[in-house]
Amino acid sequence: MKQEREGLIRIRFFLIGIFVLLFIVSAIRFDVGNDYEQYTKTAHEAFVGGYVVTEPGFNWLVRLVYTILGGEYYEVVFAVFAFATLLLFLKAFYEQSEDFFMSFALFMMLGIYFQTFNTVRYYFALALVLYGMRYVTGVNTKKDFLKFILLMVVAAFFHKSVLITIPVFWIASLPWKKWHIAVGIGLCIACYLLKDLVLQVALVLYPSYRNTSFLAGGDISKVMVARCLAVLALYVWYRNRYKTAEDKELRFYAQLNILATAVSVFFTFLPVITRIVYYFSITQLLMIPMIAVRVSKEKERNIVKALVYLACILYFVIFLWDAQRDGVKLIPYDTWIFNDERFIYK
Image 1: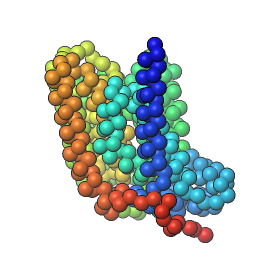
Image 2: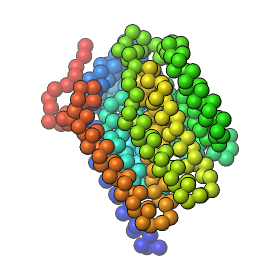
Image 3: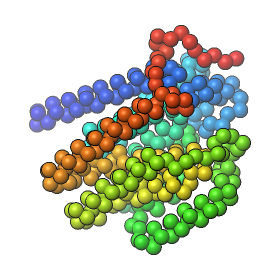
Image 4: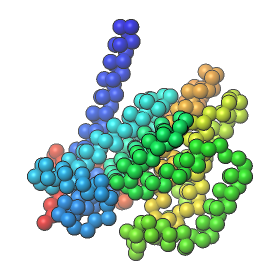
């Protein structure tokens, strides 16, 4: 009993240490992230009552922080988002992952932690999505899914795109048959052929994207598609190799990765579609460790883990190479502690 208690204490100190280190790196950054400066402008406008397109939750938080501190200390706003986002991610790994260390390694090496430096509202909402999956994967009653809905409503006060997870996650929680997939593919093709109409509908929901460069859309995210296909290949191999009984949680994760692949291929014409894709593909942080741990043969389990870590290392190298370009701006890292410069607006 004493050894178990001491082991639990060590684990808690380890988790606290990880959290504090990552929080400090995120909270003291200065002008790191492609929209850091833009957020300082938006926060200023929200505080003085100017026109902003950000959701009410962000605006209320800015006004509360600035009012309490008696000045436009945007550093504190970034710190608040860093604290809440990291807490939710790590709590989800600790309570929902079958291998905390692997989930955490994926979080770091897939660059997701570093991407939280950008679009802080969105990544807070994304963390709430991952945390809220507990109410979908183990849903036994309508009350469970209602908890997820309420959590997504809270998240929508910071990034309203998160509301799409309510119908999509319900669909993904159901067992799909072949004709369901066929109909889904047909709908994706139809949406792509009618993309002008679909885009106009999307702009009704997101009018702030009208007459912006985002309407140009983008190419297929080859990296995201490759990631999703690799994860789905691992899932298919595991199911065929071990002939396990259908697991609702694992099936849910797999079906969301199918949707992430479909959205990445057929909906590139929509503005910033990667945000929608991440709501679905973030499941990889829980799905990959779940499969790796459940491989019963030790030799195969070690091979799977080695391949996962090798792929993540290669991905991280590519991510770092891309992190310094314009539009990403995660490297070089700078901190306001050793920098007298501030963004000041009147």
